[in-house]
Structures are given as structure tokens and as C-alpha cells.
Image 1: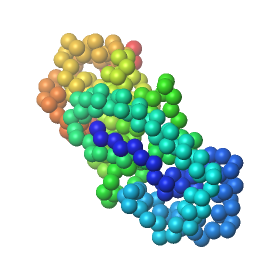
Image 2: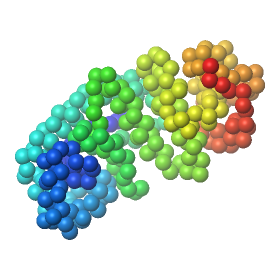
Image 3: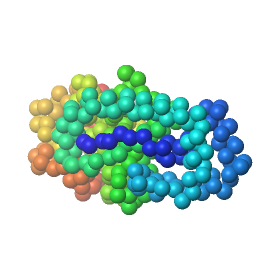
Image 4: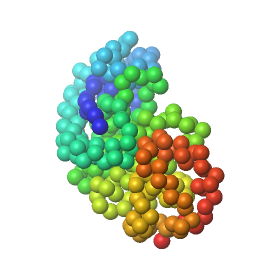
Length: 279
């Protein structure tokens, strides 16, 4: 996976202006700008879509609000802290990217496009994947606190949001199956391989039933034979009667999109099985 972490002044300032205030000084600055430059402030809000299409070459039609913020000492400090945060996240990624990339490739069997991770202040507590549909550059805005205990969790959440963005327009009429598959791949199987302990009860509770129904076929997709399935069931605390499931040997040759297509084609058969239970 090719992730490029960068700090962009316009993106950082936009988020400081339109996300929740991270300090009393920023709150007062926003109030002052709103009172004295209301029209310019409103126009700045509309910059987001164009800005995230190509942040490196973005030039605002009116940069007056940006320039005012740029000249403040408060912004100078926030920018410096954001650069430190960017270096921290970059180091975490560099230390783990080889292993994660190998696992993601093994699980999805897909090529994922390069992404720009636009780093903003971690005090903003944001992970924003919303960009224009026709954006040439794939971007995600990241500003989440991270510690040594949560570093891997942050990377998993980032990759999870990235893959959801990749597949946002795929089979939209079957969104639940797409979302359940992404969870199985990134929130469940990826951290299970990284940590050596099961994470298969993690994710959106509303998708739990569907994921349990898909789980036997997911194991087939991962290449588990019938003997290995028993070990996986015990590990993940999900039980099913192996003999009631025809073994789909072709699944282990498919990629993630083909697995989704398989589940969609066979959804009536898959979801009607009720023998699954949490141990």
C-alpha cells in the first residue's frame, strides 16, 4: 500500500475553521473572522471539494481568511504540532507498512490505489474520507490522537475507512453485504493476523448477524479446509455445522470483489441458515 502523509496549510486551516474549536484562542479567532469577514468565511466553506481533489495545486478564489489565520502565532504553533503529529504517524506506518501491505494483499487480492493522507491537528479528532466523486487524487483527512497502545488500531481504522471509500460505489444496492465484507477483511481478519488473537466480534453490531451468516464462506475464501475450520471456529467463538455447508473450493481463488459478488448471488441461501451461534 502506498500512503503519503502530508500537511497542507489550506486543509489544516479549513478544518480549524469548520470543525469544532480545539482551543479558546481558535474559538475567538473564528468568532472574529465571522464578525468581520462573514462573506469571505462563508465562501471559504465551499473550498473543501475543490481543495481535496488536488490539495497540492489548490489555489482559493479568495485567500483573505486563509492569510489572516496563517499570520497568527496560534496557527504557527498548531502547524508545528501538526508536523510533529505527522512525523509520529509516518513513523508508525513505516514500521508496520511492510507487514500490513503483505496481509492486506493476501486478504483482498486487490491492488489498492495510492492515497494522500492529509494530516491535521490531532486535537480535531477527525478522519474524513469525503471527497468529490471525480477526484483524481484519493485523499483522506486524518487528525486522531495516537499513543503507543493505539498505534496499530489507528492504522487499522485508517485502512478500513480507505477501503470503504474505495468500494463506496460498488454494488450500492447491496451496501450491507459490501460493508460486512470490508469489516471481515479489515476489522476482523487483519488485526487477528497482526496480533495473533481473534478480533471477529469487532465492528458494527448491526452487521453481526450478517457476518456470522457469511463467516463459513469467508473461511473458504481465506483458504481454510474443513479440518482447519474447526480451529477457526474455536478461535473466533463462532460455531456452525460444517457438514451443512457445501465446500466452495473456488472461493479461495477469488478476490474481495468476487467474494462480494458470490455473497450477493447466493444471499438467500446464505442468510437463511440459522445454525450459527456465538459460543
